[in-house]
Length: 322
Image (tube, rainbow, N blue to C red; front, side):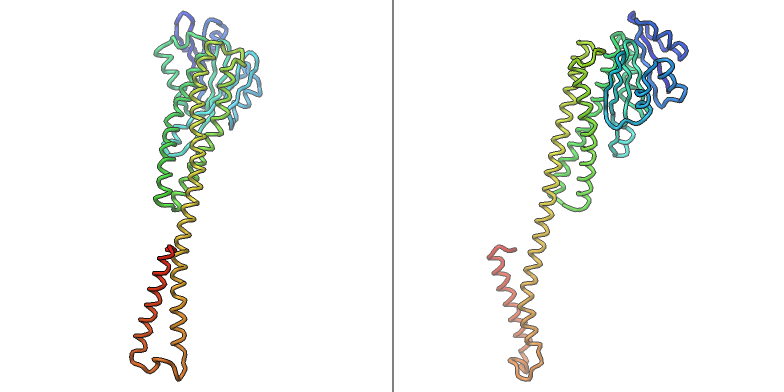
C-alpha cells in the first residue's frame, strides 16, 4: 500500500500520484511524505529509481533488522526503530516489527511490513491539520517516533501489573503454572530490553546534535522523547530485577516447602521405626515370650506402641521439629 502526501510552506496539502512524485520532490519548498506499507515490487522500486537511496540501506530496508539502528548517508538519515505489534497483543503475545525511515531535506519515506498505529495516526493528523507538515521533515519524523514511544507506555504498565500479580502468586501457590508465567514474563521483558536500549541510544544521538540533518529546535523535541524512552528503559530494568528476585523467592519457597515435607516424612519414619521394632520382636516365633499366651497380649502391645508414638510426637513438638 502506497500513501503520498505533500504540503507546501504556504499550507497547500496535496496527495500526488506516483507519476507526480518526482515533480513534488524537486520542489524544495514542498514537504513530501511517502509511506510504504507492505509494498509491491513496483512500489519498492521507487526507493532506487526515484529516491536513489544507497543499496545497503535498501537491503536493510527489505530485510528484517533485529535491532534498532541509525546510519548517516550525508544527504539523508536511515533510521530503523521498532514498534509494538498490536495484532500480537490481541493474542496476548509480545512482538515488535521494524519501521524503516529515510529522512531527507524535503522528503520523508517510511517503510514497514507490519501495521503501525503511530504512522497511521500521524497521517490522519496531517490530513486534518496540515500545519504539522509545514515545518521541516525532522519534525514530522519526531511526531511518528513520539507516537510510537507513547504506544509503549500501556504495554509497560501492563507488564508492571503482571509482575506484581506474579509476586503474589509465588507466595500463594508455587506450582508449575506460576513458574511458566515467570519464564514467559521474563522472556518478554528481556526482549523489550534488547529493543529499547538501542532505540534509546538512537534518540540520544539525535538529540545530542551528532547528525546535521536535525536542526537545534527539533533536537529539543527529540530530547523529550528520549526522556520518555529513558524512563521506560529504567522501568524495564526494574522489572527485570524484580523478576530475578521473584525467581529466587520462588526457589526459596519451593525449597522451604520441600523441607517441610521432608520434615514430616522424617517424623513419620522415625515414629514408625520403634513401632516396627516392637512389632517385629513380638512377631518372632519363640515358644517362650511374654504375653504370647495371654489374651491381653495384642491389646497391651498396641497400647505400648501408641504410648511410644505419642511420647515421640511430644518430644518432636517440644524440639520444634514440626
